[in-house]
Image (cartoon, rainbow over all chains, first blue to last red; front, side, top):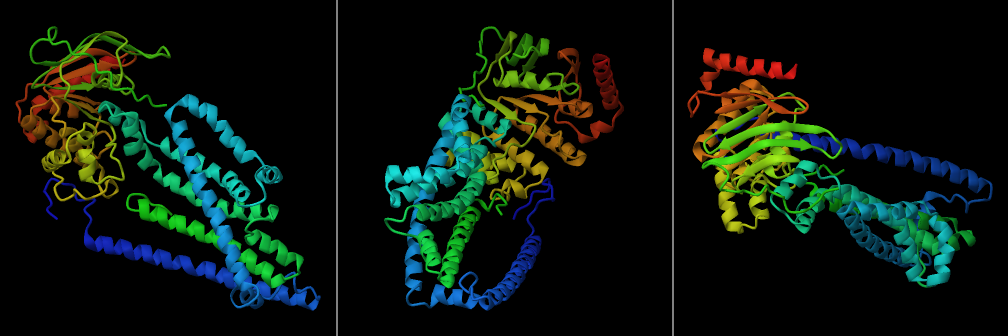
Length: 284
Length: 262
């Protein structure tokens, strides 16, 4: 790298410093992974104690042994295929709903970012949407749109759209005045300012919203399931059916699978976020 | 909320302004809608070849003056004529876009102006070389020091090849050493590129060192209380700062500043 003498040396990216930084980051990461594992081990231990207690009370289906849950999840010829199929259905509902929520959220927020009066007119409804107990609406949605895929997706969208709207709006409005004036001085159009300044600036908060919305979309899919038994049933239905048949291991396996689906989409969108903007933004 | 209308640059009227005058303010006043009077009775000219510095206490309206000159604000009274469209504007902060590399940040203004990629790349490279950032083209703003960010910001404006360069306390947030170094760089650019400058600062010694003319403002409402010609020749020897004449002029300007303030 050709350094001219008048350049301040403070921020010259020296390779050895860079390596030191990478080492630090990895040291940081490695110190991060083991505490949750210890907690997990403790929880599983506690789980065995509880399972042991319930087994002694002849109520094993309430808290089944962990290894039975694992067996139901991975190696039960009757249960495992059902779990996998239902996981697929729920994931499909969640991802469809999430995609729609992303589109609605980004468009809605972009409209609001363009004029104060639009924001004043529309933002209250985003808040109202957030405040509505969606569960109270669910029976109505079923009655209106049927008890199948469509209604499941609508519930998912209702639950997950708010973080998309609010985070995108916040991001679009996060540009500072001087940056906007810089564009204005060059006679940049509204569209140019939106695409070259506001959208890139909004990406960090859009990805935060996306991650939260992704987690909520899984909740939406499960909730939708539990109300709408028809169509392609997902994990929500499986949880209910397993519970009613006193299949403790199956219930737990389905619950854990639903939880892992939530964690997986959360991590996936975090990863996408780091991939997209990690270079210039510390996205964690 | 942001209004996105095209910048309402004060219309140049070539006939009225004397030859070589790039900025001509006559009896300019600024009253904001909330009633605050930021400026009153401002008479100010910036000619080609001049580097004019406005020094004044904070809140005296000196930034407003610059905003009127740039077209970001419109004076509420008086005549503000700008006789060029090629205006560079350097903000207090570097205002770099964090997702763009140094190269892409420097290209931004030319890009917004619709310049062809090849041409703007060449122009950006030239500007980067001029401010001493060669080798840092691929760096992101977060990897730069405050001084380097400001250099990037300077380079970005240089791509417009401005005839009139407006500076809104650009080095105020930098440490003393970086600031002095950038002062020297700015003087070198001034001599080399021959733009006219209007520079806002609250540092008297920076004002005297940089300019051919120092304008002293008093606060609330901002008005001009003194104008000093700086006799030192360009290009300027950095050691001039340690001479008695320099100290004397700094003293006079400081005195005027204090008078106006009380």
